[in-house]
Amino acid sequence: LGGLVAITAGCDVAGEEQAALIGLIAGLVVYPASRCLVQKLKLDDPPDAIPVHAFCGLWGTIAVAFCRPDCRMLESLSAASADEARFCQDGFAMGPQLAAQLWGLFTALWWVTPLSGAIWLAFALCEISRSLEEEHFELADRALSELAPTAQHEAELVRVSILLRQSAKRSPLLRAAL
Image (cartoon, rainbow, N blue to C red; front, side, top):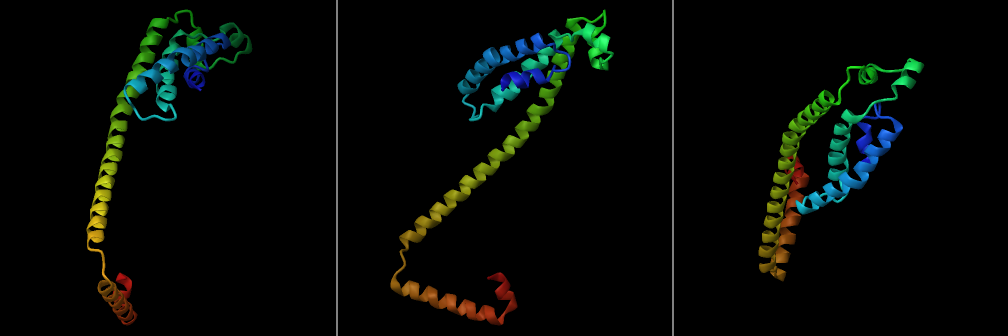
C-alpha cells in the first residue's frame, strides 16, 4: 500500500521502471523505517496510516524530481500533457524540480500540521471532558450506593413518582418537562 501511495505523486511522469523503483523503495525502506519511528514515538496508529500515507506520500512527492516520462513515445503519439512536456524539454534539470517538490512538501506540511494539531487538540479536550463526566457519574453512583435505599425510601420514591405522573396528566408544562 505504501508503494501505491508513493507512486501517485508522480504517476504521470514516471516510467514503468521508475514507478516500480519508487514503489519498492517506499514499501521496503520508507514504510518499515517510518513504522519503527511511529512506534518509538508511541503514536496511536493501529492501521499504520501515518507510515503509509504520510511518509510514503512524502517520499513519492520527492521522487517526482528524479522521474522523466518516455519522451520519445509521448512525442510519437503527440500525447504529452503540459506537465509531461516540461519534463521532456532539453533544459529540464532535476535540481530545480527537486527544490519545487521540497517547497510543495513544506507548503503541505505548513498547512496540515497546525490544522491537524488544532483538530486533535479539540478531540483531546472532548476526551478530557468525557472522562471528567464519567468521574462525576462514578462519584454519584458511589454516593447513591452508600445511601442504599431502605424499603421506606423506596415506597416514598414510588409515591412521589405516582404523584408526578398524575400531575403531569393535568399540566401540559409538567408533561413537557417530564
